[in-house]
Structures are given as structure tokens and as C-alpha cells.
Length: 159
Image (cartoon, rainbow, N blue to C red; front, side, top):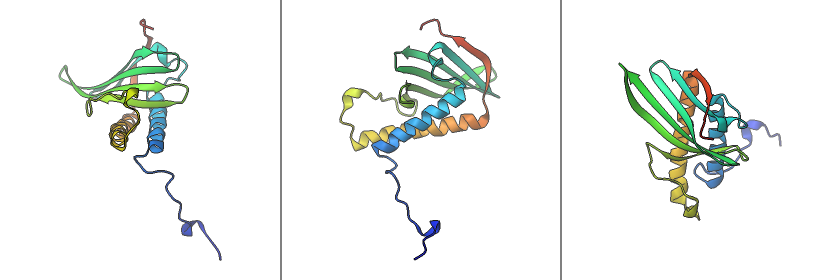
């Protein structure tokens, strides 16, 4: 019997809203975020970044830094005739050692993920999946718009 690639059925490695898939989504978020901010993890904790594209401004600042993590606050504003309208807001926990970025809260879902919510239920995984998938698609949208770093990265004096 001759098997070709077209006759082999490959099972999905995991369900879209499983814990394993959520971790994969966090990895993708991390890679896209680092690409968008044009920084590496070694000096992420020293910076604040402002990106612009036409009438959109994305402002990313560090709220908290620990040995292995950083908490970023990311705001996207639309500017029209000197008026700023908040379009998106994300608080994202970066895990440097695992190269993960997980949304903790956003305009779309203001609930906060806390570690004391263990064990993680299927409903909680679904909520985290939805929130992080939105963030992932938003990052792809920002990368597509080719946001420009108009204000060179500056040191955060709070760290």
C-alpha cells in the first residue's frame, strides 16, 4: 500500500481551548509582542515604548518588574482632532524564563486572572483563551499596520 501525505490524517495536537493550546497561545503572544516592541527580554524591564501609525498611538509601559516577570500596561488610542479615544487596554504579564505573555485584564474582559483560582476550570480556560486570542489577533493587526516607534525607547526611572 502506498501512502502519500494527502492520505495521512494527522490528529490535532490539542483542542483549541485546552490548557496546552492556551500555553501555545501565550508563546505566540510573547513572540508577537517582542516583535512589535522591537526589544528583547534582556532589556524589556528598562523601557517604555510609544508606537504610532496615522491616527493611532500605542503606549506600552512597565508597571511591575520581578526577577522572572514583568507586568506591561498597553493602551491603544485613536486620535482625531486632538481628541484621544481609548480603543484598547491590556495588562499583560510577561514570563521571561518561559517566553510567555498572558493577558491579565483588558477592556474586553475586566476580570483579573489570579493564581489562587486553581484548579483552572474549563470555563476559566475558555475565558482566558478568548481574551488572549483577541490580544493575539490585535498584535497581528498592529504588526500589519507597521507601527513606527516615533519616540525612541526611554528608560523607566521606576525600576
